[in-house]
Image 1 (cartoon, rainbow, N blue to C red):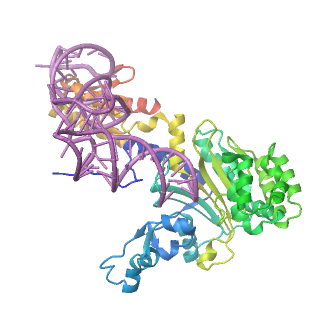
Image 2: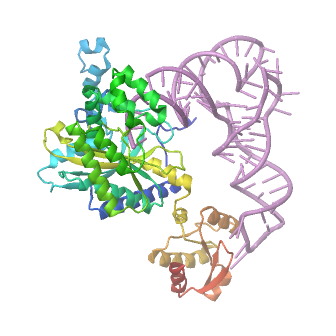
Image 3: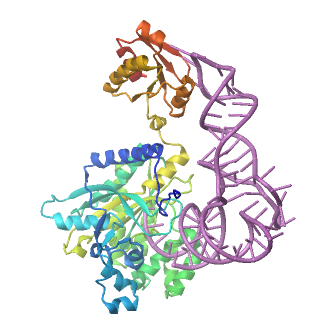
Amino acid sequence: MAQKPSIPKGTRDFTPAEVAKRNYIFDVTKRHFETFGFQPIETPSFENSETLMGKYGDEGDRLIFKILNSGDYLNKVDDATYTTKNSTSLTSKISEKALRYDLTVPFARYVVMHHNEIDFPFKRYQIQPVWRADRPQKGRFREFYQCDADVVGADSLLQEVEFIQLYDAVFTDLGLDGVDIKINNRKILAGIAEVIGAKDLLIDFTVALDKLDKIGAEGVKKEMVTKGISADSIAEVEPLFSLSGSNSAKVSTLKELLSDSEEGSKGVEELAYIFETVAALGLQSAKLSIDVTLARGLNYYTGAILEVAAPKNVDMGSIGGGGRYDDLTGIFGLKDVSGVGISFGLDRIYLVLEELGLFPDTLDQSLQVLCLNFGVKEAMAALKLTTSLRKSGIKADLYPSDAKIQKQFKYANNRNVPYVILIGEKELKGNSFVVKHMDSGDQKSYDLKNPDDFIQQLKNG
RNA sequence: GUGGUUGUAGCUCAGCUGGUUAGAGCGCUUGAUUGUGGUUCAAGAGGUCGCCGGUUCGAAACCGGUCUUCCACCCCA
């Protein structure tokens, strides 16, 4: 007896309609990547474990899918390791490869391995699946696509400006108006920590600050105190909790607050420059706002930190993020290569576009024309017509059997085919074909020898 | 990884404190309609109630385990 098939937790099948929608997002995104001068690369779905392990913190290591060695992998484990049952030391002996966890680390590896053949600055984009042994939730999967664009080998802040424009271009093209691009700078966060004398508590400080809109100012202060930051120090940065007004007002507040910190002042300066430049160039539909609570990816970001929030009317968190990392390739021995990059959260963008009904109607039109099958002789004529339609680039098909006409029509309906062609005995005798427009129900007759009339009309309408 | 939640027809879901043969809508098949779909009407097919075990005279329902779904935390796209 056949068992019920299933797929692993956190993975998905994609139906034709879903693939069409996903490809639409891919295509729009790729088109803009390329107009901004980015080039595509691809890397293997699995890497050597040592390339990935230790790059994402302890939490990250736990979430990396490890691949068992081939052959009799357990036989090679020494008895001491085996009997201690320590997962970490055992894992390194039975697994030498692991599935790609993100696209950034493999990219860093790629840059180091190919740096002699790369022309810097190198702008690459990459759209490939990654895997995480996380517990799935809505919009979070164990296999999902990441879509990254990075520039390495360019220190200029113009790169940050360009990425903001890129976000704006893509989301505008997708019809997703009103996204909020939030920007912060790690140097500002470090400066604040310095000012309140909690320099070595930077991570704890920012993790708490990041929760401001979730647990409120009082909650944040409480958490900071439990982490060992004094109440007096917290009072000094009180203005942070109610930072509001225009971006330039925020800049002035920060400038004042951080005047004693060299690093913090540098961060404010960078932020101000990016903001002013973007303002001078203008954005099509996105907003740019300063958000000092933004603290994602703090482990490797060194300058700008970016995050894109979905429009306010949908309940979806961030749909993209990125930042500047000054020393990404350092971990692989290549110093002084600066990088900036952004990422698009494709699955979440999909959910947002779906919710707002922003996918074009034409996407589910997998067939433009269906010829009905009235029998052997009629089908032959229909197939000839189908062939010439296909040669003109029209998505056309012939129903493969002379099933009941009712059934064939129903199939056309379910497939959302806008035009159905009928060639029966009558039409065959008269050397013609009848085109039925499914929405209106109108029928029109054309000459079988001259299908161009119909083709032209199809292309115009 | 911690705590909770969900699973019944192809799909969306009812099914009372455990009690005969498990239901509805949509979809599907057939017919009304032998060359015209969407609307309508009639009939029909389709379920070892996620899986394994336990309690019971009796389990879709109660208990345990497991898988899956979703949610919060952690973290993150």
